[in-house]
Image 1 (cartoon, rainbow, N blue to C red):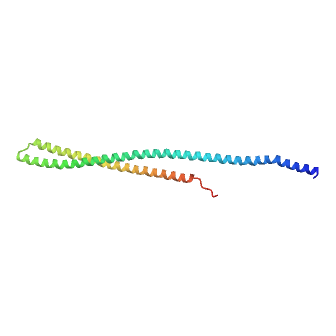
Image 2: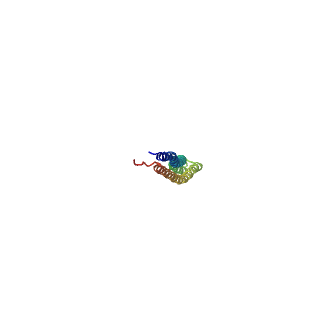
Image 3: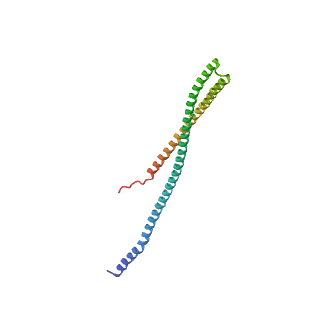
Length: 182
């Protein structure tokens, strides 16, 4: 091998040695930038997912609390309506008894066994029972209507909660990473 060939080979080898790290560094730098961008994108996606989870958790808590309050309202109105209905039943029974006493009092008045004031008191009692029954019947109607509205509100809240649950399930399915074939 001649000296010029040797210098030429050494020159080419030196050139290759000195340029390879620069080329490798440039290629490596591009790959590092690409990896960094992918990592930043992944961090951004995670932040968005965490924010969505937080929002959904808050909405879920609010919906559950509203649902609980609405259920309590429906239960309270149902108890009150049952109580009113029981009182109406008692008033009807008392009204029947009061009618019988008025009729007996009128018969006794005709026979002279009872005074006009006593019969008047019996009639006043009967009239009072009828008035109380009418008031209770009106209240029963109001409570029935109100209970119907509150049950509709409860059903709407249940639908909203179901919708939120479906949204969360769908979001979870979309957010799950797809497995890459190997």
